[in-house]
Amino acid sequence: MGKNIAIITGASSGIGMEFAFQIDSLYTKIDEIWLIARRKDKLTDLAKLLETKTKVIPTDLSNPLDLEAFSIFLQEKKPKVRMLINAAGLGFMGSFRNIPLKEQLNMIDVNIKALTQVTYLCLPYMSKNARIIQVASSAAFLPQKDFAVYAATKSYVLSFSRALSEELRKSRIYVTAVCPGPVDTAFFPLAGKYGDALAVKELIMVSAPKVVKQALYDSHKKKQMSVYSIPIRAFGIAAKLLPHRLIFWIMRFLK
Image (cartoon, rainbow, N blue to C red; front, side, top):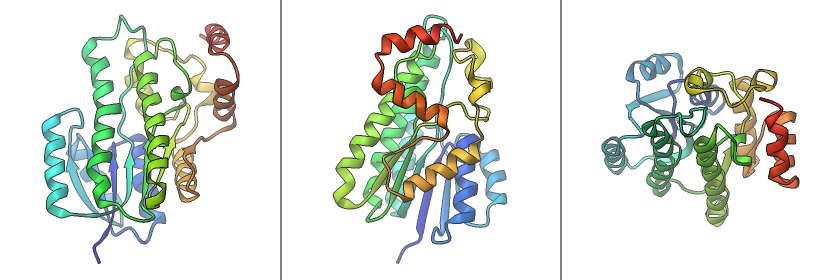
């Protein structure tokens, strides 16, 4: 029998790195963790901290050539993928007209195109009881002013994940979309260089370990969605029950 592999994109920092730590400490049946991100040095540093055997795969997910190389690598190795964690993500806050077009398109490339392609490429190597965890965001719950493209990309991740969950149910491959609110990572310093779309984020900020622990628990329970913290759960319910125009009006006063 082949090794049980966990593949993590965006593993060099933030939520992706935390998934690596928790899978390493909790999942004794995972034989090897494949770490994917752009920065080889950071992946190498992370690998040294893990007890599970690792494979460092430097990959720029916005680069089609890198994704093609990953596809070839999968064909050569034919891994037994037990977990796929798509944690790579890119976001910029601010007015749509003020964020450079290249940055907007990079968000689409990483958050939508790469996530879709990595999922598609890995799926043939997954079987019964495998898990796919897609990191979306509470921004997926409704359109957000000054977070327009990012929120739209995360809406795609949530919708895609829920549909894929239904498609794969008979194969007993389970998909969970993780929809956190603000998480205390390096995301916001980078995301805020063109503006700040979430003035209340400090009040509802949570830690990456808590989000990841909840995500792994919900994946184990075969849930389609994982939402950590009461405020974000309440936000999700409000987005379902209240007219979005009313929520937009309320959010104007939170700026």
